[in-house]
Length: 172
Image (cartoon, rainbow, N blue to C red; front, side, top):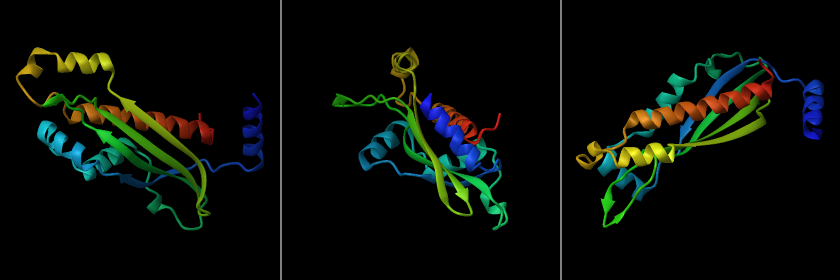
């Protein structure tokens, strides 16, 4: 209750601009071991492909289209980690679910002052993962998970991030 009061007081004293634009989209590359195992089991997924998915899924106008003297909010998005998932057996079972972690930052421009940041992690449900790994089709192929699974998780994480930013800005 007390935090809500201070948040409302802060917003009334220094209101945020209502216009939000999409800033930079960055992807942190996956590690070497994870990259090798995922390349064997699911194929190669380029970081640029993830960045293009983000730009397709988030329909905010780009911040580069705004005049320099205009006051606005910029949403920077970072894909901190991702995994396509695998059920590949390499002497010991290596099982990990498809997952994605999205970190975003809301920045007030042109002052470049950080307003808020959000971190959202989405994983495939354990029941869905187990049923996919134990399905009859999975026994006959190495690639159990595909890009659609990761794209779906990325969309869910971005939706939650945008919802948090919307609540912070105060747009209905």
